[in-house]
Length: 170
Image 1 (spheres, one colour):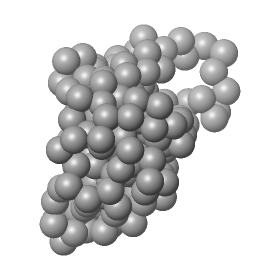
Image 2: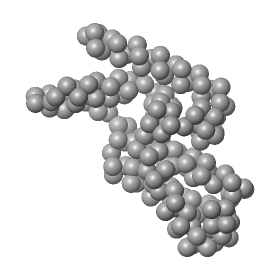
Image 3: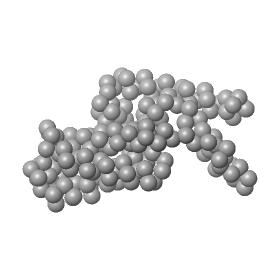
Image 4: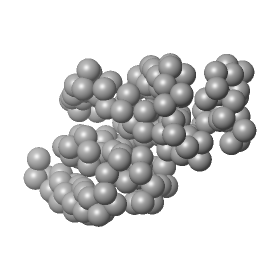
């Protein structure tokens, strides 16, 4: 893969296309962990590919390609979140006919929405994507201790919110 990266850095479009194909699953999973809407996920990935193609010559070391690519993707996802200011009204979901699993997921989603975007991001990357705190720190360009404390606070805050919601506190 390092050879493909070096070729792409020198302007080889075919090598770049192959790199994108090799990383498409990782990009999709990362975007899916941050965004809910399939159209937004597609937009984030498309914008990431364009930005990576335009800026691949700025990559300093080929070994950091995936981290560089995922960092671009996370930033594009954050841009989309800001643009959409995604506000999901739980009342808009039809309550009638929903089974327990759907209601439970709506409850979890509702609680997650109460967390900051940064907290949602670290929870998603940690639990859905399986990244460890060191990898998350690299992806976000932050100190690992910052990520650890944010993750701990996010877990604690989510637990508090969730317990209140199931006890009828909201």
